[in-house]
Length: 200
Picture 1 (cartoon, rainbow, N blue to C red):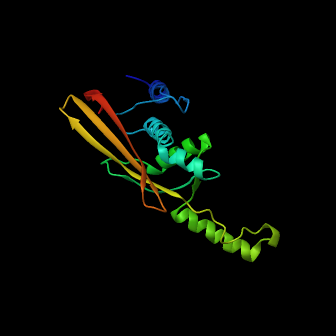
Picture 2 (picture 1 turned 135 degrees about the vertical axis):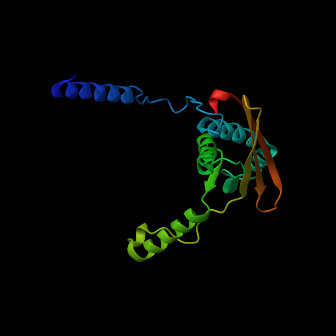
Picture 3 (picture 1 turned 30 degrees about the horizontal axis):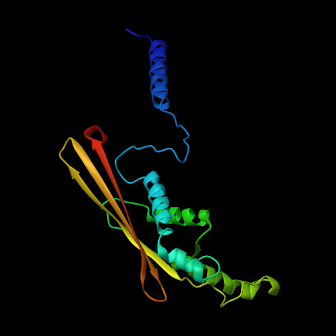
């Protein structure tokens, strides 16, 4: 029979063992460009690589060369809607930001904001009209118009036999000339991932 002090000692040892077991996993910082595939789902690496490849392809099409011959400065693009048509949650805003970063880094395309962000900026201009020093006020009527609109979708097909699962993603994007409604670029990127049962 254990004494009261022995029971306390055993309890302390048991708690210490549980705490060590819980803390042994730890957290490890990773390089942002290092892929960590915890599942066969769409991930940050897919978003970055697809955006870089597709935007690189977009700049090789004739529309970009023709624009540079006839205009001064960069073409201006507005991103309209990129729809997630898959059955899983894909943060489309992250993908859109990867697209913007890819093109802005190249220094060959300018972007104008759309939707709520544009309205927020217009509201800020109104606030400046009322409250800011006159020589610092951002003027109305000087917004840069977009010459091109980018839109598209992300689709997926998942096939499984119980032991393995194949996840297939297809990203379709198109660029429209806003003056003529002409489709000047159409891009497509496909990703296929195979996962064993233990992975899903």
